[in-house]
Structure formats: structure tokens, C-alpha cells
Image (tube, rainbow, N blue to C red; front, side):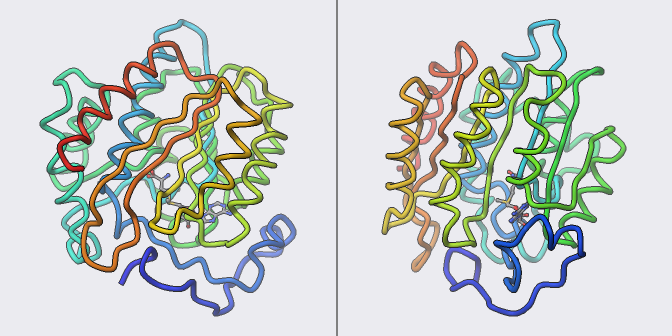
Length: 288
Ligand code: SAM
């Protein structure tokens, strides 16, 4: 059973004093989500295709940039791991859609690089996609709160020179914005385990955008049958009328699975990303 199918667990989650101070919202809660069950699924394809293309556009300009990720995950997944095989989500996701991407699509290129480095069953999380896309002089800040995921992230991304934070990503993002370099992209990809995330996120994004008005801020959200994202989205659309807002829908991967689509809300989208989003819609039309 995976996160989208079960109620959040309520057991105590052991965190350090520093993290406790930074994350009162998480005290007493178990972070049970593990992305390995979902790596390479249809939502990842949507999010990672847009992310890889956005970074490709941004790195064309010869100016350094910052990449900030608030909910990083472990950075590298094995699609032959028991957890991934148990859900079979990658088989319905990247395995089905990859051939529909142009051969020179940056996401496809990053996938090939990851397989060449880490083996055929390897799949990159967004931090590794970013690390492969960035150049010397660019800066990565990655936050991950789950102790096990954090340790795995450190092992994979430390060699890339990333700053890796065992802390609440939304608190970190507010603390380091505007970042240096000031040009840059932030990915906010929560697991939505904490019920008030939907209410908190628009407030945090508004605070970040006030301090960092040139930042490309990308929020991923799940589309579930009961549509809990809609009030959050309405607030964001009102606050950021110029943002790129892109959704894809798909059939649930199995009976009882709540995820029926994937959304990205992108403030200050790089030029060209709207056209890329249309290409991604065409790709997903195959699995609708
Ligand atoms: N962005 C990753 C990717 O695409 O490869 C997947 C991230 S996964 C959807 C969400 C991650 O956020 C989980 O690893 C979870 O442990 C972590 N997480 C949950 N709450 C967090 C918080 N408040 N701060 C930082 N990380 C958090």
C-alpha cells in the first residue's frame, strides 16, 4: 500500500533539536512517504520533463544560477528495487512514455546519462536531474527532512557540490531567498502528508516571490479524485495571473489509487516553456 492509498501514520518521528525548532508543523508526525514507490511514474514524467526543459532554457544564458529544492527525496532511485516493482508505477510511467519524447529532449538526455553512470535500472530524482543540467559556478540547495532519505541524498549529491540541508524545505527556502546567484529556479514538490500544506504553500510562495521577484518558482501538486488542490490553486492563480499553469490527467494506475493527474504551477516561466508544456500534453494524450 502506498501513500496515496493510506491515511498518514501517527507515530512519533524522531528529529534533531535543530529540526524541531525549524519545523513545528511536523512535530509528532511520522513522515511516511517514500518516493521509491512512485519514482518514474506518470506524475514524475510530467514534473521531470518540464523541469529538465526549464533548466535547459535557463542554462543557455552564460550567467550563473541557483537551484533550490524544498522536498528533494533521495535523488537517485532503482526501478528494479522491491518497492518500485511492487507498485509497478514506473512501468506505466517512464517506461511507457520515454519513446514519445524527442531524442534530443533534455529529460531523455539526462535519463541516458544517469543509466550510463549508475546502471540501466537507475532513475534520477529531480535533484540529480538538476545537478546534471547545471554548470560549474551554479549553486544547488536541497532540503530533505526524512532521515533515511536525507542520508541517501547526501551520498548521491554531495559529490556534485550540492548544499544539502536536513531541514524543513519551506523554512529553508524562506531563509535563503533571494539566493546568490539571484537568477534561479526553485522546485517545491511536497508529499502533501501534512493536511495544512494546501493552505500553507500559497502563503509561503507569496512570501518567497516578494523577496525573490526574478525567481522561477515551480510547484508540483497531485490531482486526486476529490480535488483537494483546487482552493490552493485558486489562491495561486489570483496572486500570480502571469504564471504558467499546466495539468495532465491519466487513468489511476490501479484500482483504489487516488492519483488521476499531475499539476505544475510555474511563476516566471522561462521563455519557451509554454510550448514545451503543449508538447507534454500531447505526450500524455496517449495515456489519458
Ligand atoms: N522532488 C523529488 C523528485 O521529484 O525526485 C521527490 C520528492 S518526494 C515527492 C517528497 C519528499 O519530501 C519526501 O522525500 C519527503 O521525505 C520529503 N519531505 C516531506 N516533508 C518535508 C519537509 N517539510 N521538508 C523537506 N522535505 C520534506
